[in-house]
Image (tube, rainbow, N blue to C red):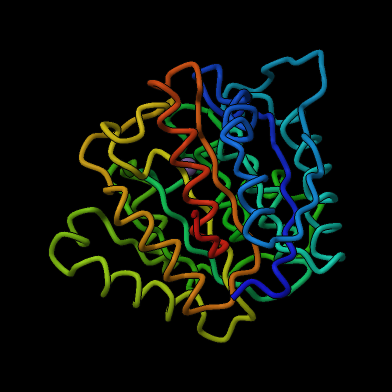
Amino acid sequence: MIKDKRVAVIGALMDLGAICKGVDKGPFAVRKTGFIEKLRNCGFDITDKGDVAPHKPRTAGDTRMRYEKEINEANARLYIETMAAHGEGRIPVVVGGDHSVSAGSVSASLDVYKKIGIIWVDAHADFNDDKITPTGNIHGMPLSAVCGCGPDSLVSFSHKRADPKNVVIIGARSIDPLERIKLTENGVTVFSVDDILSLGIEKVVDKAISTAAKNTYGIHLSFDMDALDPEQAPGVGTPVPDGLSVGEAEYICNTVREKSRLVSVDVVETNPLLDRDGLTAELAAKLILCCLGAKES
Ligand SMILES: [Mn+2]
């Protein structure tokens, strides 16, 4: 249940963590679906905190962590906005933007609640760092950073880190070899699409919730649209075939809300320049409604 139906929406117009441009337009496209009005019609008390965008000029800098300075500066502001939402007793919903924005939003929830679990729904693990990254793109690093597994510079504005043993990735099917070793060494739980096929989505989500909720105050749900099958959600910069179905994605969002204490949400990586008929933006909006328990009439 979302307490008192109090929600804050924050747009994160970030594309510097990804290689494919256009993902900074994601929040515009998702807002255009009218999801905020739909939430209001369902009785939600929404405040729209507007958008956080990186400043200009922008210089790529170190090729092992491109645009580190610009991303950190914007994330420090996103962190403050997310903290403010918590301070108002609202559940923050961050709409991205590439996944680097989660270094800002998750850090805020960690600093507020001290101990939270994370369910990270993604085709990738986002557990790289500056030493093992094959690309230098920071959107492949935020989960590692918020777990205290590096790079620490990406979360320098915050204090608390997540325990990797309370972190679960669902839908992964493209993990770099060194990243996989690091996930195992740190005790992160990974459910691939194959695991969903063999165990069933119900069992996977059950285990994900019990792992993330164990000895924690609540759960942050971070949903990368590339977790979905690219046939259903084509508007993403790094599509990987054979992803989650829409039904499975909705099931994850609904069940995490129903069976745990959801403290914050990110829905990221919607890229309208790569989308087909606004399908991915519509789906992102739909998943936000599922996370919050808003029934469309
Ligand atoms: Mn991601």
